[in-house]
Image 1: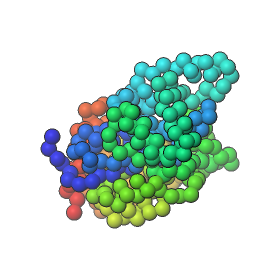
Image 2: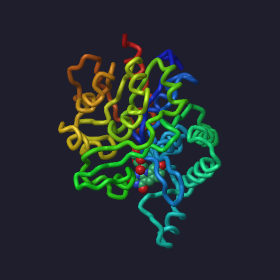
Image 3: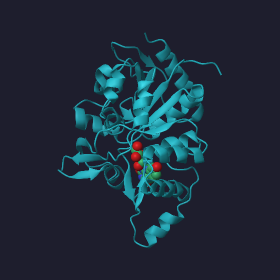
Image 4: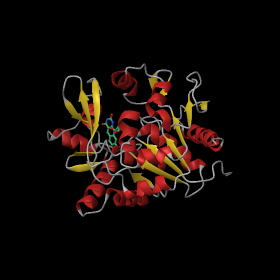
Length: 309
Ligand code: FO1
């Protein structure tokens, strides 16, 4: 396979949208060139287990285990434990599959033995033959809280899954000490290109950007982003409703670019979503649900990056 981009690439990613681009970059880049820094603001405790939905979505996608359409969890997983939990009156609003449960059991046990989330993730990846570095953005908890216009504060998964993302969002808060993991900072330090994946800017990318030292790394390195909005609609998740609630703008690829502001050196949008900008805006098919489309698009994005000064 020919090399399109010669250098170290770091992708900043959340869940399903991010995972699809990471999959494409993984297959398009030579071994050793890609590292992925993943949002952990969605992490939470459920049934006494430490769940890291975005880390798992990236890991399962790279391992070719995720369902192509739904994007999260393991394809073909069964839900016997969930049904049993329901029968016994335990919380059943978050669908944990039986095979997926092994990940949460292993993670929770290793964390309780004193391993860091970075180490645990590395071991989980090894167990699934994923050899690309998948790096949690932080080792310490940094939970995202949704402040609603009704005045309530909901943990992210309570808002997204339990309340189906319905309560209107007034603000998003990021908890924790604001320290990035040492491996994430090291990856950013060595990056020749940073890719902001088509993830939700408010709840997937901002939690990473607002860690100490991260924004500065992006200011010093070429950055290309991919729009998570196509023709006014979010490819996945609640973003289209959040943009007007949090920025007062209509949902569009441009509104997301405005959010990232000066950080961008290049941007990829769907045909018809282009706009005037002080950096190249590539209009191409960014709908990358199918595996082969992900690789085709990743190559185009790397070509865009290669052409940047
Ligand atoms: N999303 C849902 O909408 N409902 C679920 O029941 C659900 C379960 C689930 C289990 C494991 C996992 O890794 C992800 C899961 N997700 C579920 C996805 C997740 O809540 C979100 O997509 C991400 O947190 C957003 O990036």
